[in-house]
Length: 114
Image 1 (cartoon, one colour):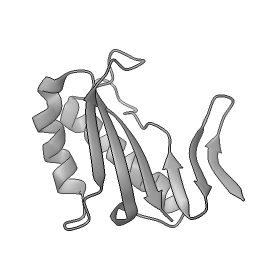
Image 2 (cartoon, rainbow, N blue to C red):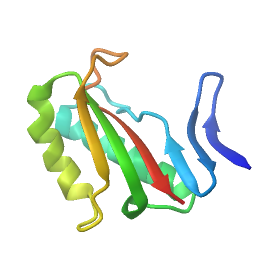
Image 3 (cartoon, one colour):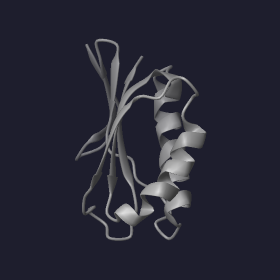
Image 4 (cartoon, rainbow, N blue to C red):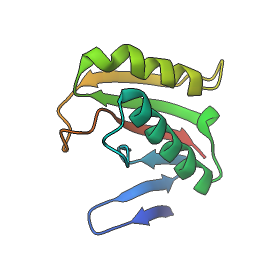
């Protein structure tokens, strides 16, 4: 069985199958915030989606982080490292990529265990 959350005409924010949660790329609601603020917003959105499926950040298996400006890497990592559960850091890839909205400073995709 596949369960979908916050489904719209283009995408679902999360799909669950076989005990694994697949989150769509999460972006900040307030694109005027700096990289730290946008990263906090994205991580809060991830927390909220995981909670809907009865999971949490300690169960994240893998994260993909997209940054348009690699100059934001250190500041994003400060927020990320404060958020990750100590001893439970997921596998991760961070790449430079243009995002759909030029005001977005970070997008994060997560796969987690239910």
